Length: 112
Length: 115
Image 1 (cartoon, each protein chain N blue to C red):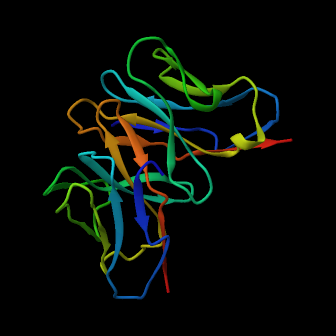
Image 2 (cartoon, rainbow over the protein chains, first blue to last red):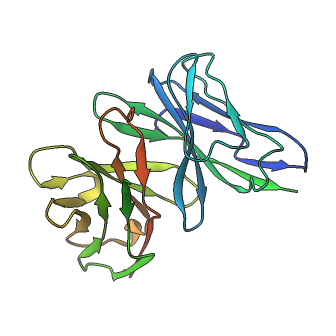
């Protein structure tokens, strides 16, 4: 989907476990985002990053962490502190010239 | 508070008929408005946007949207629906300048087009 690659497509988490979702882009975009999608609730912003080595909390950051060590990569860790992690997670990058967001195909996270 | 509302969870349309998916917003200042579409188990794809200029915006796949400032609406329309248009549609508004481009998304409207 537009140069954004998310992996894995499906992920299962055991209680007390941290899991990391991968997001890679080859679009040379500075800004990247992580959204959580729950049925009937739309998309909610978890974290975003405007530039390498910088990131900001979104609306629902509790129980999540991110890093932005490279422009191409913005991994999301779902920690054991996130008590309701089951959701569809979407990564996106923004093309600044026209404000368009480009999304990956998503990762479905479920709890075992 | 800034927000966007999609009042219909689902819209059902017969193929060949016109379709409208509704969106209203609340934002201080001039809004940047977007429509995205999501097919099952996929990411979102950009359809169209309004930033400034002509109130009628044309986008991908024959869709268009009309910005109405007095009614704070940005409804998505298509003159003749196709079965392949069946998907989940999201309206989004950008927060006021200085928000680093972050969008607020509506809850989505499921469009079902029957043959």
